[in-house]
Length: 310
Image 1 (tube, rainbow, N blue to C red):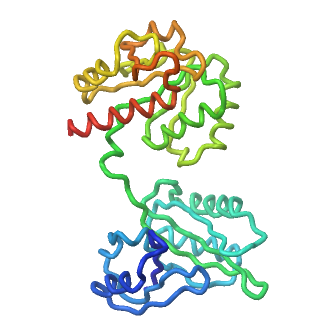
Image 2: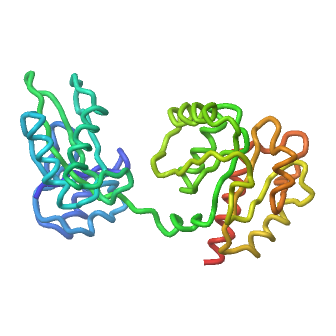
Image 3: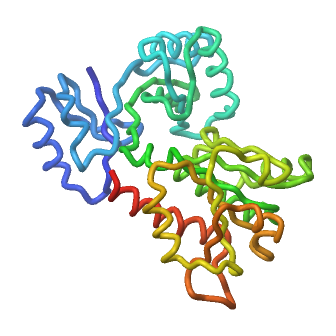
């Protein structure tokens, strides 16, 4: 079997990496002429994947093949069937007059029709690499395991983020990014559904991360959010961050919604009246934290306190 390695740093001593691999595995090394990656041909010990120098181990599933779309689709299907659930990646190794997004969609549709799940956070990625040689286009298919988040993935399962009346796509993008990073659902309080949907779409375009896994829901008011203790943050709050810490320590395991307002006006009076608890973070009064800063601060404190409780 042939493998390629994506290393974590460019300044690694390749001789050291080779030595560590051969201490567990039997095979020969080379350099791939297309990607310049380190290649290993032989029986690779699975423990190699945990080496700190190695970011990904790519297994060659289909070697260099002239591009015919129907053949590519069938090759992808046969490979993906082994895993049942895959993420799909297209990588152009040279300038080719093909749309990677269009190609990805067509192959994904073919896989789905074959009862193969295509999901961004699947445990295995199928990688299609394309390049050109002497005017002809070739492809090969590799696969690699995706790293599963540690227990932190579940640490925020009881949390929800709520923002009231965001004003700009940039402001909403920052909140979306936090929802992606911490993998928590996001609810937006807004009375104009069509208007906010446009802002959500524009915010997604400028936000990096796996947005498909974030659940975004629009509600008319805080009254439509049930099952969570609603925690508001406002410069007008009487309780400070010490009180917030006390609350978190006493509320371990409960479902909590962190509620913030827009960057200019903060939470409306009506929403402040509806939250269960209202806290002010930091001692600054003239220039309080913005919504995304407040949430990042609150999520960090939540992380520290819940890690102690585990």
